[in-house]
Image (cartoon, rainbow, N blue to C red):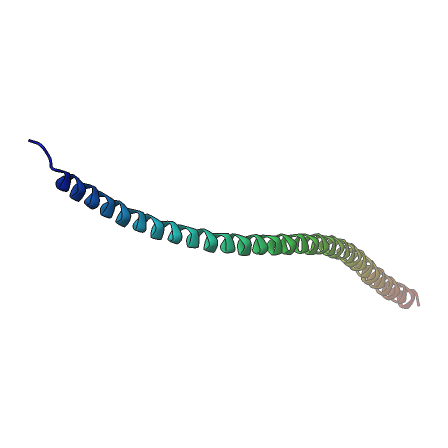
Amino acid sequence: MTISTEERLERVERLVEANSQAIARLTQQQEEVLRRIDRLSGDSEKLSERIEKLSGDVEKLSGDVEKLSGDVEKLTFKFDTSQTIGERLERLATSLIAGATISIIAGVILVLLREGSR
């Protein structure tokens, strides 16, 4: 079976047409891929900017945490100091009350002894 020149030409034409269609589809796909790459590039830049901003925020928060840590240490010192002073005042008040009570009792005893000796 010999294939005629016309049949060969028809096959070649069909192949050329099929290839042309495939090339057109590939070109469209390539354009879509390029659009996606451009969009991803823009998204990447936006993400980089957000990361830089977040890094700055983290540094700022780190400074705030250090400041708060210092404030907590100061408050702890003040609390400890006030607690110590409170305990000392409590002991002093107890001592004064005890001393006053002893003075009154001693005064009453002396008055009773003096009255008893008359």
